[in-house]
Length: 102
Length: 171
Image 1 (cartoon, each protein chain N blue to C red):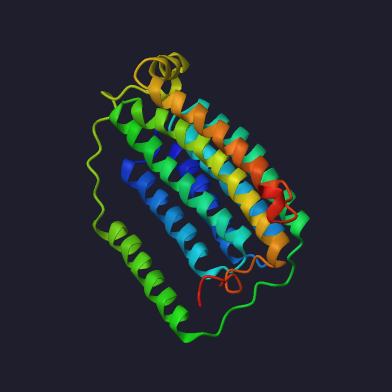
Image 2 (image 1 turned 60 degrees about the vertical axis):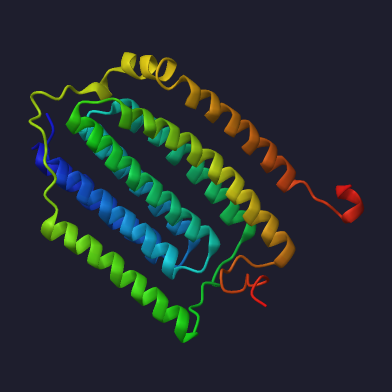
């Protein structure tokens, strides 16, 4: 028994994605920006699972598998980059990481 | 009852996701991310994708958020999230936020996705056998590629977190 319509699930997914994008735009702490990126990934998986359930197919569910794996690898590499950056520059503020600017 | 549960999980997810964005403290933001993931796992369970709900809790809430918390405590960047005062980035950000808000609003007003009648759609996400069958037949090559990706990510993290003293060290 599924409580809500496909539209409702996709709307929640869209709202989550928008919140994640908002965080990427307004936050300056690189770690929090990264967390918001993860939120956007999870929002897209919610849409995939909803579409898969309502169409009775398996492909969306299997794709969520792959997205989970890629997200795990991405977080490991991204956090390693952030730690290396902090070691070199002593800051992880987005505004102060402007070495490529001039 | 089902709709009530959906509403509770959806509201919980969105409110805690807002907490990720609006919390000044990075540790609190990570905790809000954890709660938001629990909400999404609840929505997965409502969609009868029980394995994926469990995996989301295991991989995201268990591993990824724990990793985030480790790094937040390692770097200790309290009270540094100050807003910038340059007008042009602010303008660009405002424009982007207005565009996204417009997109969400237009989906809310005009979004009418055609939903097939549920009686014909089997709950394939609830059957574990189907995952295994799909992963080892149709998606065998992507599984291999993902395994290779994980290997490369592991090597990359080892190289990144190793300390190089100078140019001579890299050679």
